[in-house]
Length: 147
Image (cartoon, rainbow, N blue to C red; front, side):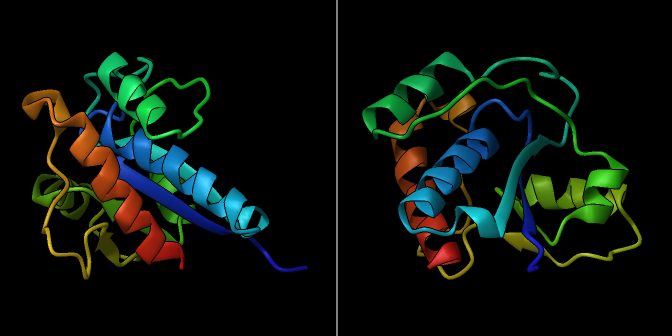
């Protein structure tokens, strides 16, 4: 039996970008018959939003993009989750710094979710308000990652 590949999306608080990436990925994988090949999670770098749901403007942007989502409670990345991940996709350079300082054994190659894209980072819409742009960019990234 083939084991599932464990993918974790990481952002600052786990209420906007990483959780949106998770639901976008799950939707993409389901539509392409790949759902059984991956375990998809989303996590935070910080503990600021632990337990919080998806930020309401991000929920609205996901709805406008016809991305189904379920319940959520923000969680910070743990050592055991780090150890069991096959790949961890980060959203920006701040997330990469967190990974580099917090998990020094460097077992994993951390990957930018934007690798090969015309944009270098996924901006934090909590600060910019660009929720629809972030969803569009994440959809493009997810398609490239799983195609």
